[in-house]
Amino acid sequence: MALLKQHVSEFSPDGKLLAVVNDQGILKIWDTETNELKQEFTPNLHLSSKCSALSWVPISSQKQSKNDRKSLERNTSLYIALASSTGGVSLYSYALGKIERDLNGEGHSGKITSMFYDGKETLYTSGEDCQVISWNLRHEKQKSSFSIGNERPHAIAHLPNSNNIIVGARQLMVYSLETQELVQTFTGHTSEVTILTSFSIEDTEYAVSASKMERIICLWKIGKKGKNKASTCTLLMEDIAHTLSCQLDDEGNLKLASVTRSGVIHVYLIPLDNIKSEKPMKPKVTIEIASDSASVIQPIPAIAASLEHAMKGQILFCYGDRQFLTFEQIVPNYSEKLQVLVRTDPKTNFSKKKSLQTHDYGSSLKTITPKIDRHVDYNTGGMVSRKKLKPVEMPFESRLQNLNLNVGEKPEAQSKVQLLIQALHSKDASMLAMVLQTKDTKVIEMTLQRLPVQYVGSLVNELTLMMQSKRIQVESSARWLKILTQTHSSQLMALGTDDLLNKFGPCIGMIEYRSNCLMELSKLNGRLQLLVSQIKRNKEEDNLNNDNALLYADSDTSNSDMEEGMVGKSESDGEWEEDDDEEMES
Image (tube, rainbow, N blue to C red; front, top):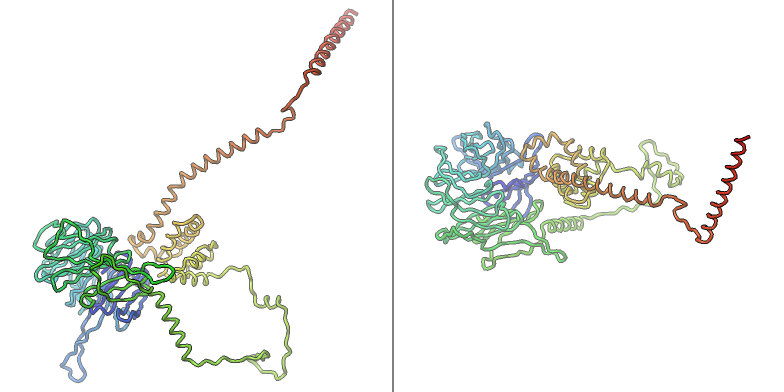
């Protein structure tokens, strides 16, 4: 069962184990009874591809006994079929804790989107190459394959009564396994169907589906041949569904539990005899989980839920952050529409248990603290002299020089790698900001070169969140993202087009959004510069040094002086003209 594109999970056939594959491709197997992490498997990402779907498969093997060669003993081992993004299928042994073998065959030419086990040594897979392949688990090889058209399937389920399979794409298609022909089609979803399950009541078969971008669940009644049939009823949710689980009670009603992306559990009670398809149905009860902290009450998201593997009338669910999970079974209170469970955060429980274990371990051990005198003789590897060495007092400055310490030296890239890995594991915002605010390109390059490949995806997610913050954080995130793409280009190209778009789609969107605003900002900057320069120019013109900018003249003295000056000038001019005439005559 594939959960959109975030993670993959499924309960074991007896419900005692839960297998989860997170974003980094790490497989974790939890015990639902003891809340313990039983196994954790990290595949070699250089040799294998990312897991896209999984399914629990019990495989029986016949062995000849030692006492009687004619008698055969049948042993059943529990395996997990892991589907890769390159189209192959591997078998992970729960007993050995490793991938034991791969299934032989051509496989899919693209990513495997979904798979299911029919309980009769046959495994069915659907891929992006629009093919459905059946695998024989006993002989560990591919049996047959057939095409389902041009639509890419994202979910697949088995209909055992009619020996058909139902494939979910934009529409639901029912194919016969014997003739490999299209029997029936259903329409009703506007996006790709990602979750699909089936059940039957006597001779009537039903299918339940949820899509990628819709907050509804559709119930389909599988019948005779037909095309474009509508759903029997529609169920409403508050968010997109991640898991679905169905169970029939003694009265013939359908119990359906769904876990949404926000971590809320919806439980529905559907009377199959009296279904009203005109009006969408709301959940009978909604279960939310909150922390019991005295300071801040925060919601705890639910990860998965199951009705088939729980006790009668109860529901089995787990909650946490996929690193620390807690499993529980309760009886839903159908008299209330909203049921809030106050629980302790699994991370807090884990830290308390760890501290108690270390405390008990330390109290049980008898420790002796050695007493050391002040005068200690340090022996070398050669001959030891019996003469006592005189204590040599060295100044503190020389000691620092011997230690060869540089106070202003920057930390090495290896310490940055450890801090970055620790910050990505614990999701500590302060520690992550301290690492990502590094501006030295050489330190960033060495840090990313030594960063394991499984942490690249989580680092891209953190950088995407930083690009939505302030300008300083945007600069640092762009710097790290540029060097990251240059350093891990080969690993990123091996992910494929869809995974790259999912990882870098938000980053590309933020970059395009900010680049679109760059043109308007440049225009505004130019206009502001013109206004500022004009204001400065006006101020400079007003502040010119002009001594005669202001004159004051007295009305009594100025006029008389000017008149006397004018009269004297006219008389002197006449005298000069007479002298000139006399000189010309002589």
